[in-house]
Image (cartoon, rainbow over all chains, first blue to last red; front, side):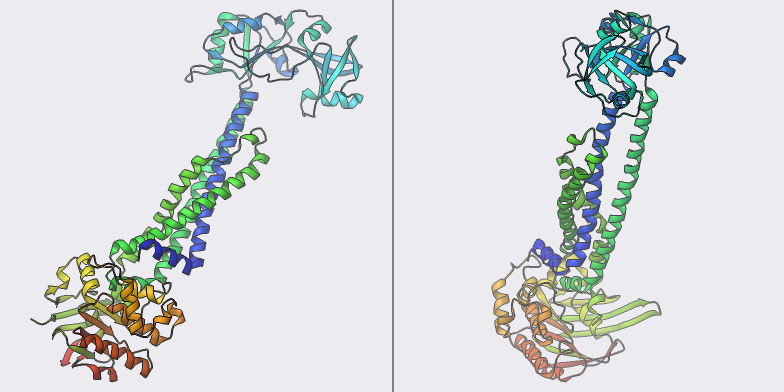
Length: 381
Length: 222
């Protein structure tokens, strides 16, 4: 009778032992697959957030009063709009989009507001990326949440800004930041309203990074700007980026601790079950020995059984772990929810690792079975 | 030289209470075709002697020769192969594999040792001969003690061994079943096989050609 038939018959006979072992493998695989799948999403989400928050560089005039800049949230000094095209000459840098902006605090019907003019995006030479921000038509304005709420304004309404009429292109959702008090128009409209033709007070470089991965983006940018825009300086929202990166790093550290811990616990669980199974089968081992079956057959019966359970557990664990990641992941990682998908590399890894893991966990009991003195059992008659 | 030879066979067990001398310089020769009963009180070393004879228990000293092969000079793999091809075991507790049907239990013993192929037909023939053809697909848990022991006898015979070593094969059986089992062993013996049977001194030994008395690890009569 071949070894696989014996293994299958034994599994069907001792269902509970096998079921508990199967659950241990499923737990280990499910946990690992779910964490790795959502971990990947976490990385993507952080990259996305870093791109949107951390790696966005703000280029302002060199003589900007930085205390006022941080206090107001924008530079008080202006610079020529053409500077944005100088940025294209910077070497060793990659960016997706450039935008010129002009911001000012204004009084709108006796209440404070921030007027922000935004230019059309400038893509790098030879490349056209989709717009990262909404396109603004001349004569239209987007209103921050508070402004719209306090004035009961909605899309399509007409407003008057500093003596000029604008159509409300849309009202924005509540952000919980100063954006709730922002009126966003096309740059040329804002320049006209503020009587600052051809002037901007900030260039935003989005998705900006250094082509040389060994160099810091900000350092390279500062070197390049010194050449092409000597009258400017650059600010990076590093604190937010670092905080986000630190958060991701903490989550990774947590995963790095929890995954091995779960695997170890499951391994001990399987080892204990295998030990019980070995004790339960002492008589069987004795008679197999008496019938002339060798150590190879005995060890194959035990290790093969757990490897087989590991294989089944890998399939079930992958399915369960993926299901868990796909159902919980979108709640956790809203930005990259659509990128959460089954990772079939993990399936292959599970199919290899789980049987090996189960066999290793049951190795000591299997070796005890092999080295068990059959006479000791048979003598107990 | 006899078919089975034990020479100065000694076996000590180490226990928490100290060394236990299970066999002490035992000399025994059994010819091919003999039916030998080994008797003695509990703990006198009968089972130890039988297991040593079957290559299952390495003695502390002395030698065991079966059919001109000194068992404990063989590697464990060679000894397992020798056991599979030449020796059949029957135990008091049957020791059937609980998750295999009776037919599979008998068949389990065939095709082991490298010299034979699994022989399902012979397993079925043996079940027929032992009057258990209708029970071949039953699990051991579904059989009576007598049926289990008959299956164990069939398993011992599957590879047509030269010798059957039976350790109190009737110990758990009622008189009818006990006499059936002894009869099967006698038939094996009549066909030229050698039988060594350990008994507690019941009527089973009446079937034997020779009775060996063991006491405190030594043969006191044979």
